[in-house]
Length: 289
Image (cartoon, rainbow, N blue to C red; front, side, top):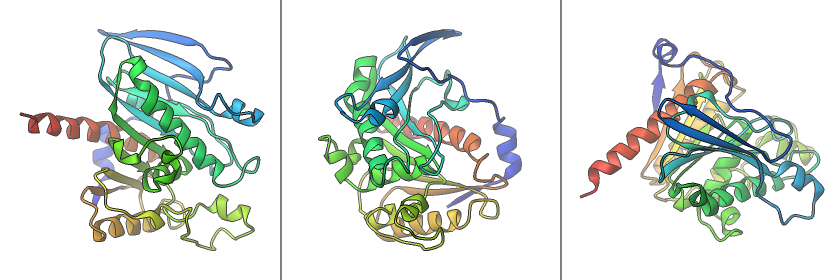
């Protein structure tokens, strides 16, 4: 477990608005920064076969990727909002960083019920695994993440193998899971759908905690300050990390971002994610003969 001090983080991360934007129809934006060129594609459907009008509305993703390189890493990001709200967006730390970013919407409660939103997240990840190569990306360098509800969705898809199996994929083919303050117990919205109170804690099949398994998938869990986070969010995440380690998972890390609450922890967490990817891939290159 690593506790990152507030002053160190403030020296490294400056909050800025998300780059990119939301489009009402599929469109392309090309941009150039220094010697690097990037293109953004908006509203790509990742469940085009669905007959559900709400799926056709919400099951779309935006793709931001470099056009002057190939074999690049990709970060798949799911927005927060308690599984009841939120829109796809990009995080500023990942702009012009040499990586592609996929930002995906998913269907929301109460218009759909658990586990439809997790199934959507899995479909978006599967789309990335199967199509990022068309844009020059490396399918073996896909990292999944999300904030709050988005972190929960990413964790569920990474731990419960059945969601990606429905698309002929396996989460261990991913390069890493990095969750930003995501539920590790059953999500409170899923509990609310069943008439349960917010503090009626459940660890059932819809909890990442119930799918502990030893795998090569690197797992990085990031929370805000335990005194500033949502109720119990740090503690449940710390327990999840401890159980991963105790179960024999070889590559699990917990970061607590001192001084940051549930909302503003996203900025340092995004930079931490980028730094972690760069450092890990640099180490992997050194190991190759």
